[in-house]
Amino acid sequence: MTAPSRQQLLRKYDVPGPRYTSYPTVPYWTGQPTAAEWLASLGTPGSTRRGAPAGAAIYVHIPFCKSLCTYCGCNTRITQNKEIGHRYVDVVLQEWELYRRELSPDRRLPLAEIHFGGGTPTYLEPADLHRLAAGLIAGGTLTSEAELSVEADPRVTTREHLAALAELGFNRLSLGIQDFDPRVQDAVHREQSEELVHTVVQHARELGYRSINFDLIYGLPFQTEESIRNTVAAVTRLDPDRLAFYGYAHVPWIKPAQRKFTEADLPVGEAKRHLYEVGRELLEAVGFREIGMDHFAKESDSLWTAAQENRLHRNFMGYTARPVWPQIGLGVSAIGDSWRHFAQNEKVLEPYMQRVLAGELPIARGHTLTAEDLVLRQHILNLMTSFSTRWSDPELHLPFLDAAAERLRPLEQDGLVEVHADGCSVTPLGRTFLRNVCMILDARLARQTPPERLFSRAV
Ligand code: SF4
Image (cartoon, rainbow, N blue to C red):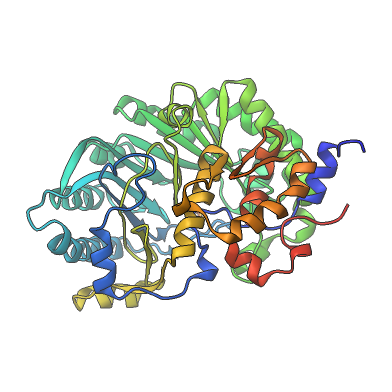
C-alpha cells in the first residue's frame, strides 16, 4: 500500500477541532467552583511535571476597541469614550484587591507574569495603563525573571503607552498584524501600513522591549499565496522575535460582523491550509522555527530555548516559556486556571463591574476537573508542548487511554504518530495534524461525537 500524499492527508484530516488551550475545552465545562473553592484551589500547587511553579500569572482583559475588525472573535466593547477606561481600571484594581486580601495579605505573593490582553489594552490612556500595572505589582512581589507583556493595536499605540509600561518593567509586546495586503485589510476593516508598524516596533526597541511578537492570520478573505508572500516579506523587514500564525475561525452566527464578507471570499479547506504551508516555509527560510502548533520563534528567543529544553507550557494565551501557576484572570470575561479548576468572569461589562463593586468575585462560569480530566489534561498538554506523552506511571494511566491507543492506529498507518505500549509520539509529518491526535485523547469529545466524524474524514 502506498503512503498517502500530503495533499491526501490534509484533505482527510481537515475537520474542525479545538486548539486545546485548556482541557476540558470550554464547551464541556461543568461544575463551576464556588468563590471559596476557587480561592482555596489557587493556593494549591498545580502540575509539577515540569518543575516547581515559578509564581502566579495575572491576565487582565481590557475589552475596549476604537473600531471593530470584522474577523474578530474576542470579547470587545467598541467605544470612543475614554472615561470608561478610567473607571474600568478602578474596578479591575478592586477585583485584584479581592484576590490580594486572600492570597497575598503580606503582599509577598510571587508574581511571575502579568499580561494585558484584549480588546485593546492600549485603548487606555498611558496614565491609566501605568496606574493599572503599578497597582497589580504593588499587591505582590515580582520574581527576578518576571515577564510583563502587553498586546497592542499599532493604530492606537503611542510611544507614551509603551514608555508608561516599560517604566514598570514591561518587556514584551505583542502586535496584532494579521495581514499587510490592502485588499485583505479593507475587507477585515483593519488598515495599518508597514510604516506604522515599523514606528511602533522602533519605539518598543528603543524603550527596551526585548521580545516582540506579531499575530498573523491565514484564511482571511481575499488572501492569496501572493498576499501571504508579501506579508511575510514585510514581517521579515520588521524583524519580530516571535510569531503566532493562527487559522481564521469563521463563525458568523456568533460574530455577525463576519458577515461583511461572504464565504465565497474565503480560502477554505485545502486552499486555506496551503496558505499556512506557504507562510511556514517562508518563515522558516528567514530563520523562524515552528513551535508546537501555529507558533514560531527565532532561535534567539526564549520560546525556542524552552522548546529545546522541554519546558514549554500552554495556557489560554497560547505558548509560554515555562509553567506558571496559578493563573488569575482579572477583568470582564477573563479566565483563571488553578490546574484543578477553571473560572471565567462575567462576559458583559456592566454585570462584571457591578459584581466587583459589590465586593464579590465576578465568576460566571467554570469547571472543576475530575480525576479523569486531570490525567487527560496532562497528556494533551504534553502532546501540545513536546509532541509525545507516556502513561507508564499508574497515576497517569486510564483504561480510556488503552482504547485511545487503538484509535490512534489509523493515524500510525498514515505516518502521523508512533504508538508505544505506554504512550505515543507525534512524528515530524504528524505535527501538522497535532490537534487531530489530541482529539483522540479527548474523552469528553469522544463521548459526544460518533467516531467516524471525530478526527478525520474518508478520502
Ligand atoms: S483590535 Fe483586536 S480585539 Fe479589537 S476588534 Fe480588532 S481584532 Fe478585535
